[in-house]
Length: 351
Image 1: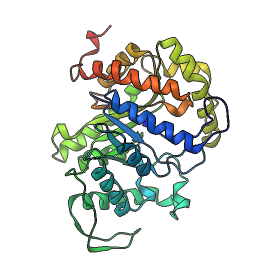
Image 2: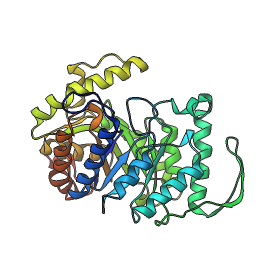
Image 3: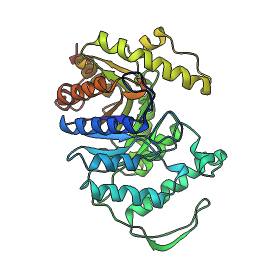
């Protein structure tokens, strides 16, 4: 199992309580990616948002800065909002990142969980599904061939133009980022694309029917099982102990999701709600190293086996030193244990 970290480059105050500095926050983020590389984590992902709370509107720029200071870790988006982007420019940017990183780039593409990118770039929200379907088709076509003949409804046609540069990796790794929509799982399976499933609430095992749907769609489309890998994006934090991690993570998590809830109609986050999410079956991965090893293994079993887990920790606006320590614990304690697990160890063999 690959173990990694995702970040939305949360824009919050500095550790000493002074007003937030975008420059300082970004430098600290790069430092965390460097530390993740040093301790042996497999992948680091940067999201994409176009709002004041985050600094990740240009994720490829952040990843390119990280590429210059790292040597091994894979660098990916988490996710690229393809519906509101030009697939040609997206491919060119990530191909350039791939060359700069000596073949360590990936992208996870999706429709995004926020909608501000659509009016910002001149797209109608009513075209939410059609935009993604068309642009994914074009992106995969560009990946397959240098010169592209294509026409669609939302972008000028291509009549054999070349798309450059070409990446070092062939084919360039593209995963499909999905939430809870069955059609998205079926699309990924039919296309034979690896999945990154965002599981940020509820119980992880409730996603099993959707994962099964993905694997069945892939089988019917003739894709080999090894091509149909499942990764999970989860919220959480690893501390020295479970008690310490819970107390450190809860205040910032509650604040962030209560604020998001005002926009989306969710109720305020309570401690009881949080405690349910950090229970054995809940989606949040918060605890000490041994707690997370056990819970990630349990979640993998619940989904029929996963190939990657990426933990988003900066949602709770924790201090930089605590995030650095969490990166170290993920790389030195959790990742080696998860890599040593059998591909699908039955729950009955775990305490």
